[in-house]
Image (cartoon, rainbow, N blue to C red):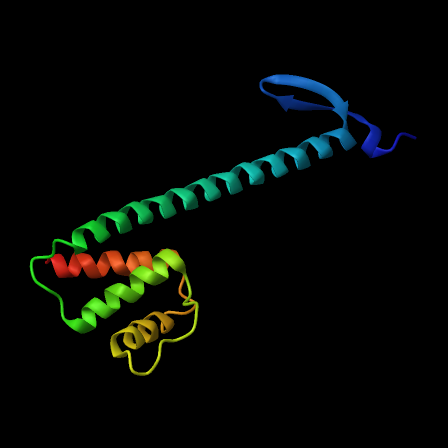
Length: 136
């Protein structure tokens, strides 16, 4: 008696009927599923890259816009812009904190350090939103 896996069967492939065995049919179906998921995953990666590129372009435009704001922002807002910019361009704070006597540098360092763990893309998005709000 012939095993079910070795019995002949037909598989439709691009409008053609292929003669094969059930075992090969199963392999073809598995391969088709693998290729489908690989293709879908590739699309997700491309769309993620596209979104990241859009955020970077928006960020670069916001950086340019921040230099021509209608009114000078408060020191607190400027500090927030600075820390978001640093997080977006360099990532988490690095280096030693400045001395306690350099108040401006210390405030900048602490503001940037408060964003530790935030992704660059997230910092870019927040920067863009803040600049848009400041533009009015």
